[in-house]
Amino acid sequence: MNAYPGLGNKKMNLNNERPSGLARGHGCAALAASAVGALCVLEGRAFEMRDLWAFSAGPVVLKPRFTAAAGYSDNVYYLPSDSPLEELGLIKSRDDVNFVLSPGLIARLGRPEATEWVEFSYRFDQILYVENTDSDSSNHYFTLGAGVAGSRLEYDCNNSFQLLNSILTGYEATLGGVALPSGNVERNNFNLNHNLAYALTAKSRIRVEGSLSVLDYTGSDLQQVRYLDSMDWRLRAGYDYSLSQKLRLAGLFHYGQQIQSSDTPNRPDPPQSDIWGGSVTATGNFTSKLSGNVRVGYEYRDFEDAESDGYPLVGLGLTQRFTEKTSLSLNYNRSGGVSSTSGAGTVTDSVGLGVEQILGTNRPWFLNASLRYIHNDYVDQDQTLENFRVTLGAAYQLRKWASLFINYTFELGERTTFDYDVNQVNLGLSLGL
Image (cartoon, rainbow, N blue to C red; front, side, top):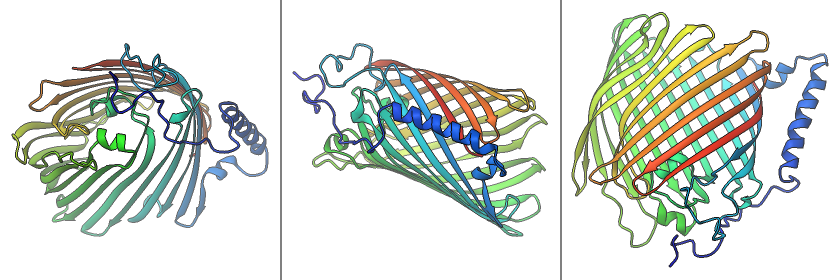
């Protein structure tokens, strides 16, 4: 009997070809070394090197960026410790080394103090594996934002578009109950956020907000069997009041829907859910050194032809700045969602703690450490998901436009059916302003 139905006895091959002329590992290392050498030579010339990373002409600013990194993971596919996939020949190696090349660009129309602005960004990630070459991937990330502010009316939007063909990793994969290596999962992710505010007085405003999130799995038949396409939209309306120059209080009511669908014949779509609720949020500076937001509320979720549920909404994002170079952040969030494989409703608690420290002035070190814990309950199912993650990082600023960085991550996932642990290390060079 095949322990992993749908995979058969074949290795995964999603036909990801290596870009011509780029050798495994050696080409990435040589490219990064050549870039550093060339930049050191150019810096001695007449122009400032930082001008290469920020072009401006009137209100238009262009900022190219580039990152080259090498990493190692002892569990590339986030598998359980007793998984036999490597012994069965279904994957080439449980652990692997990867190389990432990430060119990008930020383009902005409008000066920082302008009341009208548009900003666009793009990043391309080319990920190459030494052993698991079938999992090489190319990923595209776009963002588009804009804002207009008049004497009373204000509008801003923030949109992101992701065209991905990478391995589903960590919490994103196990949330859907995936115990197998995902291979390269083709998916498109779109997030749209639009906000409109009208000032009634110097301190009070009416607000209307809308958001749309779409996740579309566009890959092979196997992926379509595993995953459900999803759409989540919200409309929010309410009122906010300025308690002080740096602190605002907002009360918003919201309504929306979570809809999932299957592209697989004869697989019924999960019941859609109608969502409504309300919340009160305080945003700004609570003291001279403590800033962020605090949100409390309640949400009710009504599933079509299924049981309904309600749960408190809690959001906390606070940063305490002890000095100009030392800060501590705390985040907590409680919200509802749906599983990308079963369509079951979930209630998620997420808490995070982070510390940042800057050492030095001319060529500073940036040190950071963070902890994250997620607990996920599946509604009307005897199933839970827990995820714990520790990240340690350091970056050395060679110039204003160039930094070397190293990161270490440990992740532990536990659920009713299996658990996993992963150690990862990444070392790289980042260029750009």
